[in-house]
Length: 249
Ligand SMILES: NC(=O)c1ccc[n+]([C@@H]2O[C@H](COP(=O)([O-])OP(=O)(O)OC[C@H]3O[C@@H](n4cnc5c(N)ncnc54)[C@H](OP(=O)(O)O)[C@@H]3O)[C@@H](O)[C@H]2O)c1
Image 1 (tube, rainbow, N blue to C red):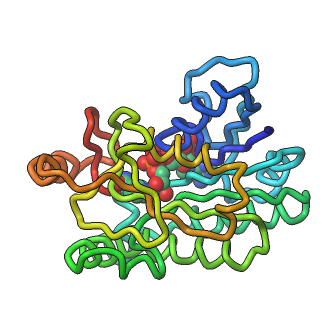
Image 2: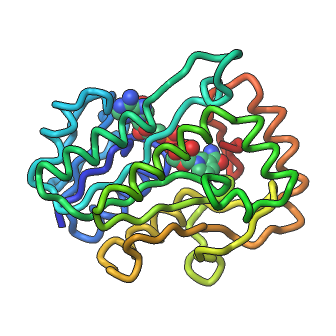
């Protein structure tokens, strides 16, 4: 399959790219700096561009069979006004992708948002809901807008709503739970590797069209010890931490 990964230079997007290439797909990575990916592969193309530039997005979408959106915002911007400037990368970027797909006749679309977005807020514990929707209010407003646009698009979409992401290894199907109605606490986690592997498995499954899935491990005792330490360490950084536990959103 010919797949475009918007936001494929980092995180879930880059994990998806590696796995898709290994399975023989032809992958184009779209981001402002796709060379950060530092992978060389005969079936890998790099398309540098800003997702807010509609003509660049349209060019990248042309000729593809599926589009993955794994765009993210730095944590300092996720808080939003009055403490940080507004960013419309998620909603504006998604709108550009959907318009390009409609014009170019590409139907399959998968997008990463997060648990706590839109109706999935009710699947979080009260503490998790308040932490996410108040602490990261701009990010979640943007994710709400993204999901609204996607659901109105008429495309073959799937929304992926992971719990807190880690850079841990892929644990596989046995430990990775996937469901529309899964519930989550603030300590529940899943690795970017398992999210990417799950997405790839769903890509050609019409059963997953027009559905929004939560992806998560079961909460473990160790999570509650690691999480506060991670939050303290992450306070003044963007979103990158080494090791198995990454900062929340
Ligand atoms: N952190 C968590 O615990 C958590 C939990 C659940 C869901 N999520 C969500 O999961 C998604 C993926 O997160 P992640 O941490 O794996 O990825 P990430 O590190 O945030 O990567 C974001 C990607 O978006 C690209 N990007 C950002 N702005 C862009 C722009 N204007 N134009 C083109 N590309 C742009 C970046 O590439 P360039 O810099 O090269 O442009 C990068 O490839 C995000 O939506 C995040 O909110 C996160």
